[in-house]
Length: 572
Image 1 (cartoon, rainbow, N blue to C red):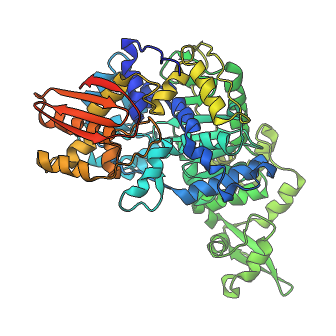
Image 2 (cartoon, rainbow, N blue to C red; image 1 turned 180 degrees about the horizontal axis):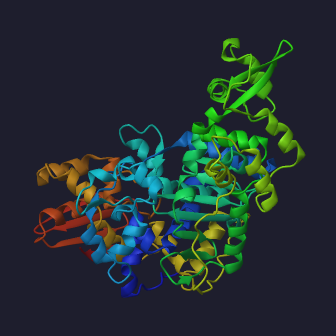
Image 3 (cartoon, rainbow, N blue to C red; image 1 turned 30 degrees about the vertical axis):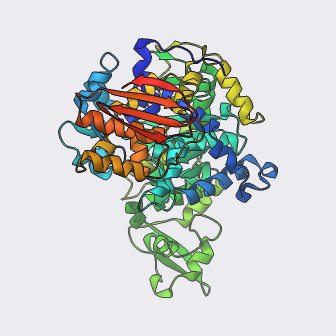
């Protein structure tokens, strides 16, 4: 095993942040996002998924079917967790002091939810801070909002109220990226991570494209189906600036003038994403649009033949019946849906002041509406001209429904800095990938940071880990505040000598506290975190041997057995 590269003093905060991976830290140090993807790719837990019977026969499936198989596995095994208290609290002043010289408060307020960001008018209208639970943190207090490794996600099952694993949006996006590569065999070149101030998701170049969105995935057809679930999945791209795009070749960030992502890869991503977010307007798209914008349904009616006579029904009634039916108004099952409806919903004569939607069947039968052709758009505007749509705002909404221009980081003014290729492929074994990444640590910063996100203390400098453990783990301190010293020590001693990480990888104190378990070394570090908060005057020292961890607390010492196989002597 080769020695780890030396860490420059000015990079200590970044390397320490690779351990805690808080929302703020990833915004300031965007290379951390991909370091977590690589850490998850190295995790034996994700490689073990390949042996699960659920993935039997995966190699014979199309890439699209593989992704859908993975989606269901993630839905079954992980909950979306947005409990902001899970990883504790910090203050705005403390975080600004940490990152002084990298970003000021005004910049953070425009781009980060923890510093007051609310997005555009859409988010103000919906009081997004209350929706995410941020409103209860008044004044200078903010949550850490940390991202979890796959091991920490799996360990949520040890917490009360969590029957499965769990994670927040960045955790789920990096989990998806790693599993798409390891389990589904999707090349990393085809996976792009996108972060906005309030969300993180991936765009995967499979078929017409696939978006991962928390636990679910969204195909192009789903993007335009007009359902409430899809409307929620669209929020980030419709209403937020994408602050970071991260890829195997590098990243681009709205804040920094330097971009490391390969320009050709970024251009390919932009073209594919814009194509995914755009469609021709057809009868199906019009009806999907009206499903989503229910306020316009009262402008329309449908004609339906019943016993040889024309009858008319308000459009909103049809959508109401659609909720309880397997049939849809927007596809070939429309007529069967209308047949299912109660006869007393229909009128014998056309209703006044309502456009007849059936006329658009003929309109679109002639040709769809191509948004790139102004004549097509004008033809649609003329056809939709009625008292409801005369100001053309409804038509503009339809056009916006059919084409979204994402707010991506601009390339103008960026200084492009090439990174050496990571060159890891789906056909490689886990051992081969580990060897490839380890060989590149001295020349590739993200490969080096990946081993810190991976928590392998046999391959890393201890200083970043100890800095993170003793400075940014407030949950254990808060959780033990009502316990006397001996009670806290006894509580830690009584927990299972069981780490959530394999081999020489270590959990942080708040992971030990949240999951109520830890190797003796991990529990010793948790005790050190409590002790420094309670008795800052005491000198602390840690001695680690392959089978024992000893913590000296002033005049006393505590020893617990360890299975981590590590050796170290550190003053804390």
